[in-house]
Image (cartoon, rainbow, N blue to C red; front, side, top):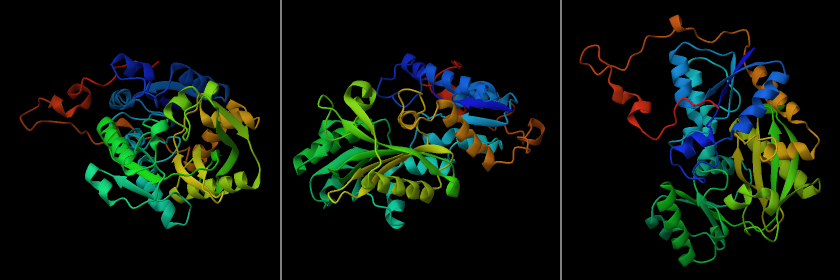
Length: 367
């Protein structure tokens, strides 16, 4: 079985001038190598595709795969994580992890929290701030917590994210609005323990592979599992295997949240407890990092003696169980012959091609 690999290579974007923080969600070469080597150990043939621009070219050239192992985060837009899966769906090519709807929904933390609230899953009260004028309408009691609406890897989160008064609220939200050019999520600050739950599988077959408590050391930025704390987790964070009643409740809530959104194959759920020791959903990551040593999902597996090979195997098994592996991906002669003409003869309108239109996209590097 031929497995394509789609991903965003961090170095490609650094070479284009993007910052370390802007590229924090993208993958290092050793992550791609680890996934590829593991898939080969499991008996799969692999093909490195790379980012969405490489995928577009390969599809246009007629390349196809039995399934794609997708960890591409995307670059532009609030639905960026759903772009590669949407393109693969258009070509009827199966892929791992959640579909475009789920990936877009979970990246928009406010939308995901509305669903949690509607189905009765505990999550902190919140407001979505789109402009500074929206600050006047916040009636939540302090302390509060503010972060960008649609970022991951702790981007935009630091020691200032815990807000104690209106002046701090205005300063923090104004800075986040200006820096990230997206709405800000403001929610009730939860002072309790922080957990992360690893999940594999889909729907009724979804199960926890383990739960760990995230403990910030004295040298860490306090009050939050921030960008700096995540980037330097080896020296700033302790991950502790836990199985007390509060932790088991977190595991139960995490699975309910995973199923409520329709997440698939594998990922991670982050929770924090309120003043009553009730774990609340902070967010779901259905496209979790899977570096074997530095990403939370493999870290959880390591604490529970689950080899990396088993983790990748469980993800693949879940994905393959969802699709009819006998069905071939759509062939070139079955696809409509779409062209992007400009209505002025046979010459193509090159401005319709995002690769040509923008200078800030990586090239053909596939690691």
